[in-house]
Length: 65
Image 1 (spheres, rainbow, N blue to C red):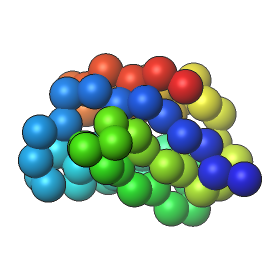
Image 2: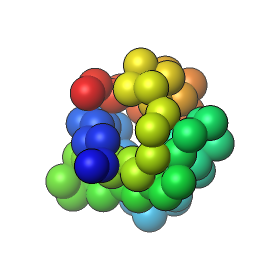
Image 3: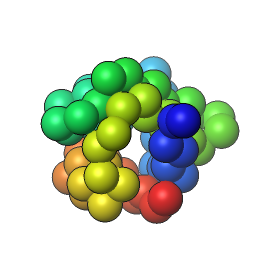
Image 4: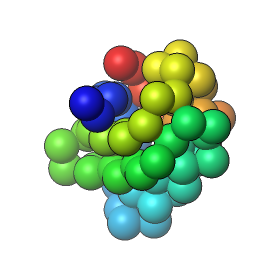
């Protein structure tokens, strides 16, 4: 079952890629995508939600689970 994060602050495709790359770098993530229009990121894998939120925040965006 995927983990869905609410991500705000993405304004372009580059932002989406930056969020997806930040999430993909977390141990336990098999796949990650971001959608700026939906203000959402979807993560496949068994990574800890708090670590995912921290990775997005470290990339410069606001996130919550």
